[in-house]
Length: 324
Image 1 (cartoon, rainbow, N blue to C red):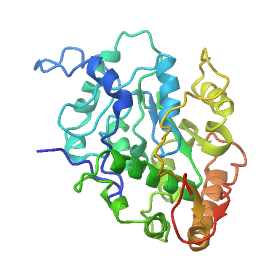
Image 2 (cartoon, rainbow, N blue to C red):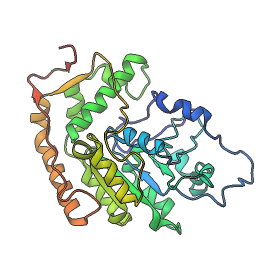
Image 3 (cartoon, rainbow, N blue to C red):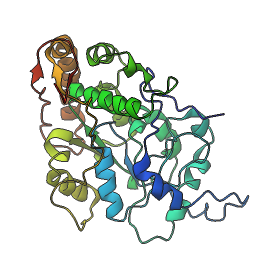
């Protein structure tokens, strides 16, 4: 049976078939040691760097750069569910999480003895599961060494990026059972109407989740970056990450590697104004809570954290594609 990876809410992240970028690395990477003694496990340490998201917030570009700098990634699961060098998907997959800390350690034992300062799990959907992360780390003697990075993006733009990602998958593999099948019948305005509304479990409601991370972990262990102001241009985020980790990277200037670019002619470039009009009151309330939360808990972040700006929209209630 195929492993089900359970999303935090709704079913919009049941996980990605198009992970070819890391598939070659996965094929040549270490396979799980099936020997009963798990001989390296006693020396293995939990990852000291977690890049927890958010999805479509630039995590792939940042991770690609960190891999180029020598950071050690995960040995993927071989259980039929999605898992990669970048994204182990342990905390968000119940059938994996219930196997416990020893199983998680097993996927990083190959990092023991490597000439790398950091071991990283960069599963972006860990953001929705702070309780699971704490359960694994709470008794670890190296807990104070843990560094957590989260990248935040303007919510409407993030949902549009996700929708485009799903449409791109559908154009390549129109599987009626796939997690992205909803975009075959759902316009972006319909998609956004369900995603950008009041409710504690909606994924762009960042304050709801980040407040739980601050309850479980020292805010000084957490770096919050703005996708628009720091990650997209590259240089501010690279240098801020280096300062946060206390490490000088070889490449600490310029943009991150260009990844996740899509040439899909159905890609929507601008948000319909009807979406902005409907979503703005909710999104602005979510964002206000986020700014207040960051000002109160004071994690590593720009102070004040830059406010999200909604991009220019187009009239109507349709999908404005690249070819329109």
